[in-house]
Image (cartoon, rainbow, N blue to C red):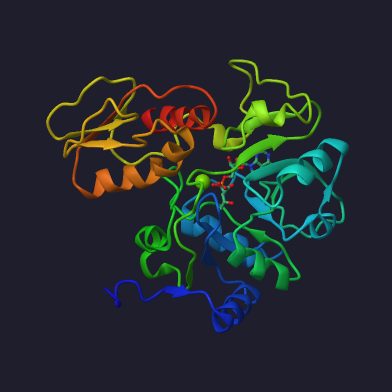
Length: 315
Ligand code: TXA
Ligand code: MG
């Protein structure tokens, strides 16, 4: 066991210093956040950003989220507006990402933002990653720590499985509590949700007026591509039961315990279901099933983000 996972470390003072030194050298490391684990590198370093894209095999036109300790740090790179302050005050640090205009003087690598004049910024709440961000004099470009179009990792072992020895340092920060990626909100022009997350439209609408993307409108966020979050085997939605060699993802207490049935939440709790989604995908794949069927999941609250990921996984 120890040998296989020799790149996973518990967090302490020594590892804090080692992480900082590694990031300063332009290396890429695995870090925990409250949503999912990330692959972190210096957003001001061309070499670090290049390493992130290469490791993930990520298309160059898909921009990265830039992570900061607080809004004072982010003020170096983006132009804030009234909507930003409203949401920042309410939800940060936390599982929400803001797309804002980039400042001309910003030092963020143009490759990290896919040459756009906008930047997606986030303030993660996980203590470990916050203590690293606090000590750096640059922000972290940090996509989810998985190969492009796959499912996000929610613990250090997932990250190690994904990249093997290609990353030398992954910090073990336990299981990510939320388990799906942050809500992405564009605050340029009329505010819009580009990627649903655990902080839903209904909640955000209490603080500002969201407008909604029209059906068939041009994709504004590259992460909105139809096929994404794929477990690598076929996923079929709105099923009632399963066939042989195929797993069934269920939700709620009416589904029994069967060895090929995987319940996202016996209590019909959509937040719990979201936190179990990727964990369940990985478990099913490891057990060698050839297909995943999924029952209908209620499309409200966190269910909206779950259904968004399921739809893309099934495409
Ligand atoms: O929860 C999260 O957000 C995680 C953790 C590690 O922080 N990160 C994450 O990063 O999910 P990634 O790279 O897997 O997804 C970033 C999303 C993509 O959908 C990308 O297209 C979008 O953010 N994005 C980044 N910059 C953007 C921009 N300037 N405009 C619109 N969308 C942008
Ligand atoms: Mg991702």
